[in-house]
Structure formats: C-alpha cells, structure tokens
Length: 366
Image (cartoon, rainbow, N blue to C red; front, side):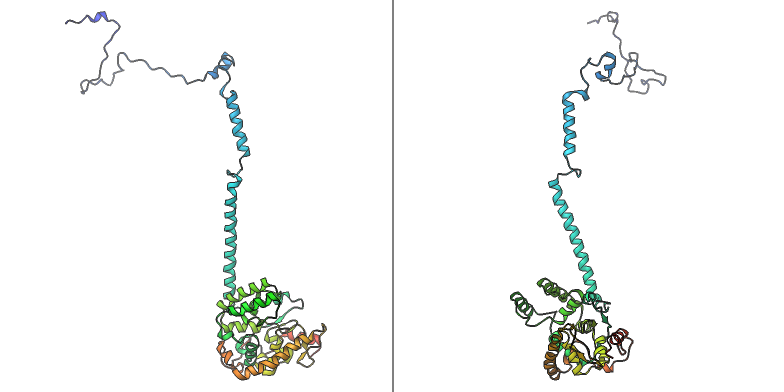
C-alpha cells in the first residue's frame, strides 16, 4: 500500500541517528542534531517569599520563620535546652557516674597508701628511723641513739625477752589469735590485761601510734604489728625494740639509758642493772637518775612508786628466768656470741652520747 507524500506532514522532520560504525559517526566538525534544542541557563530556584518586597509582604502569607506553629516549636526546643543539665545528662543519670569516679579515686588513694606503708615496713629491715611517734609527741623532748643489737649485753637482751615477750623467738607472727581474743574480752569487760602486748605490737605502737588505750587504737596496732612481723625478722625486731623503747621521761633506747643511769655502755650491763632497766619499761615516766648513778623514784609528780613497783616485780621474776634458760632465747632470736666479743665500730655506743652528758649536767647528778 503506497504511503502518503511527505509533503503532507510539513512539520515533521526525521531525526538522524548515529551510526554504529566508524563511517556512520559524525565528524569532528559536527555541531549536533538538526533538531537539537539550544541550551539555556536554568534560573535558580526561588521561594515565593523571596519576592515579598516586590509583590507585597502578604502575597504568599507569612514566611516559614514567622509562621505561628514553627515559632512555638522553636521556643519549645529552646526551653528544653535551658532545662537540660549542661552535662548532657539528667542529674539522675550523673549520680552513678559520680559515685563511680569517687570510688575510683578512693581506691587509688588506698592503693597508694598501702604501697607506701609496705615500703616503710620493708625499709625497717635496714633503716633506723630518726624519730618515732612517741618521741615526737613527748613534750620533754627525746634523747636517743641507736646501737646494733650485737653490741648490747646478752644479759639485757635475755631480760627483755623474759619480761616482755618470752615467746618472741618461737612464735610465727606478731601474736597468737587466742592471746588476742583473751585481751579483747578483758578490755571489753574492763578487766586487767591478762598478757600484755608482744614486742612486735610494742614496736608498732612506739613507731607509729600513741598511748591512747581505745579499742580502735588496739585494732590498728594489731594490724601494723602483723604487717611488721612479716617484713622484719626476730633479730631486727628485738633491735628496734631496745633502741626505741622508753626508759625515762625523755630517754629512749638502751644506749642512752645505760649511760644515763649507770655510766656504762650497753654491752657491759650486768644482770642486776639489766633487770632494773627492763623494769622501767611498763612505766618509764616516774624515775630519774640518782646522784652518782642509779634509779631515783623520788620525783616531782609523786608517782615514783608506780615505776618502783614495776622494777621490784621485774627483780622478783626475771633473774630466775635467766638462770633457767640462759642466753638460749637470745640465740634463738638470731643473735649469737657475746657483746664483748664484737669488734669495735663507730656506732657501738662505747662513749657517752653528748645529749646524755648535758642532761646529767643540767640535773646536777654527776
């Protein structure tokens, strides 16, 4: 069937198509298809409210920022932002976090304190403290000079063990729990202490605590002494005790006490004088040097009888103990040989300390 003439469709043009071969492709000078629509710049999108100045502010109604609903919603958000805590969380959510932070800080402080305390205890194996809590709290001052325990008379060391802690060389730890429980019960009911503190407990008290008799202080003393007994052996424990125990209103340690009362070094103490010195340990504050040497209980506070009673008690008990056991407890504590057999050294307290000489001169009891 014959088609109509193309002249009947004057407005229709045939679009040229690109060939699929190289020959059919347009040349480099080809400027586009015959029916290509020339490109025109696309105007930017404008909001109807942008022409408010041109057509009047009421042409399209109020702008988005001025619509009532939007304004109230914006104010609501601003009010919520003002009520919200600065941390971004409600206070109820912040409290657990603050507790965790506080607990972490407390834990760090306790850990640091434990490490420092452990280091102090370990250092006592070799270091002689320059002062103690007891010495620092004494209003009369303190006279003290350390001496190696090997240069101390075995009579004195045996008397100390017999009078203060006979189980020191044979006990594991600072005390036994049976003994501690008996002492606690006696303290609660107001009875007399059945056994008294052990040497490790007294060392811990002398170094770190005070003379308060409360149950709290006793508990702290027990903890410190247990830790000290783990860090220090019996020999060093005995050495710390005889060097920092109190023997007079302002005298600490056997070096100062031996020269002050008896005008001799601690390595030369005989049994009688050694027993008198250990008798002063329970009550050392009510005695003074007698003229020419010895103990004088006629003191200004009128309580010399208290110190005298403890000395008499020691004289009745300790010599028999030494006669029966000799120096075996001292050797079991790790101290062998005799003080007189030790070679001389610069710290053997073989000469009178200058502070002791000045005290005797001030009292006029030379």
